[in-house]
Image (cartoon, rainbow, N blue to C red; front, side):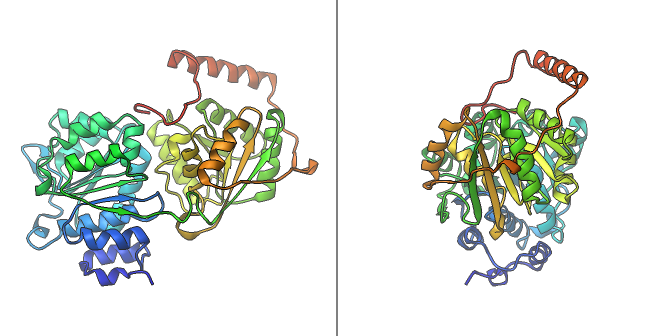
Length: 430
């Protein structure tokens, strides 16, 4: 039987947030991490997305900030001479993850009186700067934006009591490790704060971070029952590139679903699918790394609310995308990294729900199938499409083709060259 939250000795304010979120019992990572964290010890946890790790470090962090003798400072937006002095700092690799953590923090912390602020790229720079300068209790941000404001003396890390590094492995994959170390070296020493690190893997390079910047952390590993989610029905179709879109139309009609997430390997292909789906009666939007933040948030909100039935995404959205009720994940392209396959299909069947993952395997990606099946340690079921599953595509007019070609040339010129598929993990800031 799972551990109920009421057995953890949490404050009324924290329990109120837990009830508001609809939580009753701990997930495995929460049951393992919270008793340790609530004793004031550091935790390095290995856990996949969708397991409840965000709530674990928020509950532990809020509890520390609200402990006797500290609660009087809550909600005052600590500051000194125009410099923000956050008491809890959460560092995450992507904007999407920062936004999701902030939403969870506001829900769980609604009765705590703590002021919560997030900073990330794509949102008004001056507005975020002034909000941060005014002070906050909990600061959530991406490494790049945090460093920008740190160097401008908009905020200081010297009063941080609780540190969280989320998706630490992704920090390495995206080239953020130097930025992360820059920030961590400006915090109080490990023995004067409590630190949490969560990662999909506790590799040697991730453990090096714990040895350098944490105080003898307790390592917690939640081993998934499988590398893929048990509740996900996985199947694939072998299809020629020229027939692929017709099959996609047939699958969308047959499968239905209120939230369908389609993954492509390139931004260019995501935009092309958005256009083709729209022309054929499916409202869809592309979520790629170059979409400005306001549009990104609008797209995600529409998808979460059910107003947008189809979201086409690149792997920039594969991590940190936290949306309940995704019924189907469709791999338009097989990913080049087998781990990305797991992260993609993990967007459905979250928190015990069921879902379906369908992969369309053409001649360009067929060689990627074997490494994926080896990684997940299973053969993915093959289905053969009958003729009636292929629907005719409404083709673009000559004018639409001309306009699309012109837009593509303009984008390529702005980037300085043609886009190429990313091999393995994306590198650098995207």
